[in-house]
Amino acid sequence: MKKLDQATSTKSSIEQNDHLYQFVNNPRAQKILVQNLLKQKVVCFDTETTSLNELEAELVGMSFSYKKGLAYYIPLSEDKGEVLQTLEIFRPFFEKEDLLKVAHNLKFDYKILKQYGIVVKGAMFDTMIAHYLLNPDGRHGMDYLSEVYLNYKPVSIETIIGKKGKNQGTFRDADLRTQTDYAAEDADVTFQLYELFAPQLKKENLEDLFFNIEMPLMEVLAKMELSGISLDEKWLAQESIDLENDLRALESTIFEISGEEFNMNSPKQLGEILFEKMQLDPKAKKTKTGQYATSEDVLQKLSSKHEIIKHILEYRTYQKLKSTYVDALPSQIEKTDNRVHTNFSQTTAATGRLASVNPNLQNIPIRTLRGQQIRGAFVSAEGKKIISADYSQIELRLIAEISGEDNMIKAFQDGEDIHASTAAKLFKIPLEEVSKTQRSQAKTVNFGIIYGQGAFALAEQTGLSRSEAKQMIEAYFDTYPKLKEYMAEQVRKAREIGYVETILGRKRHLKDINSGNFVVRGHAERNAVNAPVQGSAADVVKMAMIKIQKQLEKEKLQTRMLLQVHDELVFESPIDEVELATNIIKMEMESAIETQVPLLVEVGVGDNWLEAH
DNA sequence: CCCAGCACGC
DNA sequence: GACGTACGTGCTGGGT
Image (cartoon, rainbow, N blue to C red; front, side, top):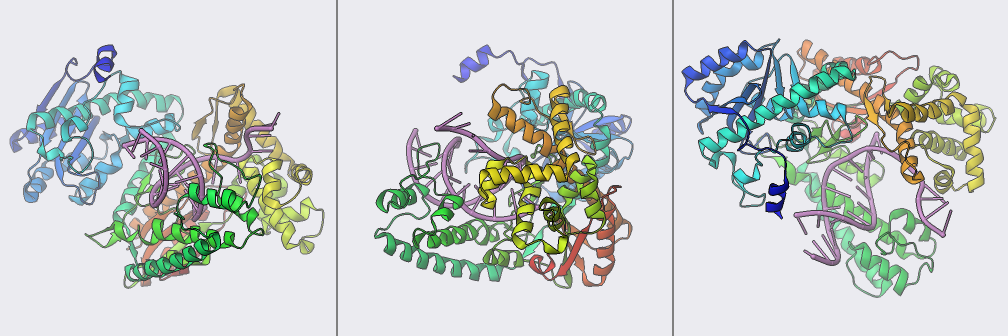
């Protein structure tokens, strides 16, 4: 199979390609190389390390390219002192302001170098982020981009260090010629991708977004990731024991009721117990693979039929809390500083949002009481406080702003409770007479509208009948006519030019918008409405992050930005800085962009994330 | 090793 | 009759 691929492939690879890849391993030659690099306007570089985890990684080498087919490799010693000496030779390159430093996934190299005392400065260009802006729905790996855009298949890292698994070696194990060819090729390919993507960014008016938002944000994210956040390990260890006890107790209750022992973590086995043995629902829904559906909303509807359901739901909640958070988080604490360091992916979410991985710190529980306690385990260091600042209703405020919906804009300007205000208008009653149910229904519509929700789903959520839900949506659009117009306009725009845009010009291409399949087209239409809203909110938060970081550094504060959770920023601040930092954060967030709808930020301070929120 | 089902966040 | 609200990450089970 593999042979066939190679035989039929028209892609070239390192054997066929004209290139000059040289290693440069004596200081005199390295100094000459640097003089040469400093004369260039654009230089591509790459670092080779022993690990993808920047905190554990050791530098093994660096490569540079400023011309197609030409690249240099600098092997580095196993001795850290010697590495630092070599890096001093290259410091002028990394710190030169007006030299465009290009790399693929630059945040990785930035973090590695920062740990060796080199802070990359000035003009930067990440080819991965460039491609993300050009095609946010696509894949952005270097090997993939090389094959697609350069028709060239780079040497895979696995041919050098082995397939992943416990026998995988490190880059240091490879011989010098192998290291040189691989590293130099990466720099060469990245340089060629730069030459392709840079003019495309310009042509698509994405340069501002790239150079003024995404690249500065990359540095902010690198610093946040290196900072990490502290956990209350003692509490987590005790909570793990408590949850385990609660789970075993729930399990025996469930087994007793069902008259059988089975694996509670298996939805398949649970479904068979509930719907075959116990016959709880003769019309039980099946999933697409033919299993019984046992998701929360399915079980919720059965809860009045049998007492076992509430125990199962409780079991599920606790099992999730234990496996994903209470047990998993402590295992990801870094030994070097006893903190957890998430990775923010800047190129994953097609709308412009960030994603958080290894661990994901953007989905820490908040809704249930027991879940909230886990937030409490994210603590500030001795002598410091946690500050949390979050935008109130940012997506709704932005859809009001973008659509120019005066009725909604006015409500926000008057500082009204937007859901109550919407309810008053929907039900044509005075604001004071809005009931809890009415407010809650209005809230559901407000959110649903952002996602392009239809009558069926609205009915499902509110408990209204389908026709009532339909009337509610119609009343909503009568209340906010420009919102309806805006949504139709986004779909029309997508059909005409193939994409929609955020306030900062971030694009999302919607190739399915003219599809004949109404399910596929419907999805694209909802994206046409949602992407500009979600994406504009992401733009605003990113701008705020850059401005706050700049201000904190200008004022030489020790306050550190630690986390971003889409509309919330979390900081750690020395106690005597909290007041000043809080003022800076709130001010910069609320003034991140100029809008007629006021942006409101709520700030809290505490010894942990729960208290601060 | 990968996919399905589920649950957590905004 | 099917379809039915956006964007994500990660756990466990189950089949390969």
